[in-house]
Amino acid sequence: MEPVALTTERLLLRAVTPADTDAVYDAARDPVVQRWIGDIPSPYLREHAEAFTGRIVPDGWADDSAYTFGVFLSGGELAGALAVNRRGWGVREVGFWAAREHRGRGYVTEATLAAARWAFTELAVDRLEWRAEVGNTASRAVAERAGFTIEGVQRAATVNRGVRRDCWLGSLLPSDLGLPSTEPYVPAPA
Image 1: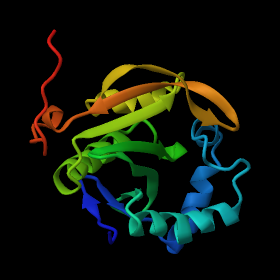
Image 2: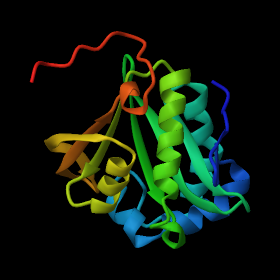
Image 3: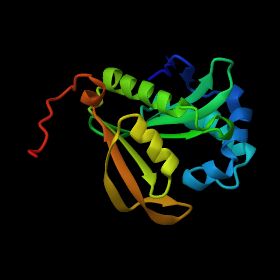
Image 4: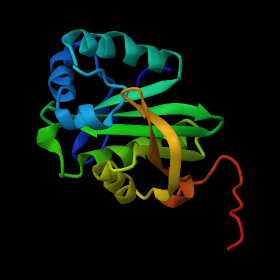
């Protein structure tokens, strides 16, 4: 798929490009990003940012495995990043991080909701999952504000710096946002 751009009231979500390498490099070296995003190299070198903006992001769009967006403010400043990754038929997973100076302003929640609506309406997604290592309360707060239902803890379900860790799992369905599903859904009886 060719990269798409999404807009919200305050944000532009678009694929990062090599022109964004400096901003990605600066943001991804933050110790909080390093702590919780297990697949970001640590230490984070400029060559990692160059590979991310020049190869990893375009390749993910091209092979439909990961739709990665930079989350940009109206002035062009990078506020974070968000990816919608393939998990299975009709299922995608969202992951995100916020640049240090832009945390606590609701940007990532706003971006997550925009990406979720896009996934449900344009990608025929019927379930959007979110995972975060247990203890990453900021990520969980974003997921909950975006309407995800926290379904529980998965034991040893994520790897961070070569160590298996427990993670929280949440889901968002099209109906949670008032959108139709592509396939019928019958919830389990209460």
